[in-house]
Image (cartoon, rainbow, N blue to C red; front, side, top):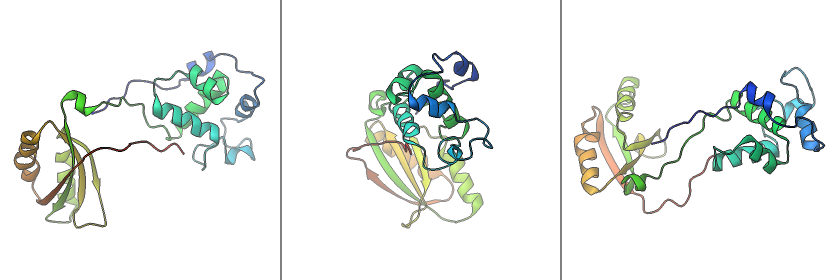
Length: 204
């Protein structure tokens, strides 16, 4: 239900971002961090390497801004986090290269596309084998109504699906003619979502 428009901070963007030297202390901190992990022995542990946790507050602020609006320009982000453009772009590129930012996505309202009902379906499998699970996971990905699929513990079922459908007739068709016909599905239990209170990503 989502797509990822191309948006990565490239080396060209780093080179062309405006005003790399600012009087702002945050700019100087970011500029002093080398891209080489062997440099900056003291600062390296908390600021330079994105695989070190926790991220600093500026990184967390950048992530929160991008989570809210992935189309926000580097200039606007820099203004919000009190950096100049070049250090801000460098931080974003580090977050991308380190795998913290894995993509930029468009959030689509399913109801505007006619998917009026959201539901959670717990699925039990007849056999707990790698082959059976692989077959199910491969098949379930082909159903556009399924927007997430997780293996869960703490309950008798094996999988928890989040599904969107247009109406009850659509749900019945999906359940009886597709989900229940996947080989190995032995039992399903459905709960309808009354209202999503909120949904958000992790920002550090």
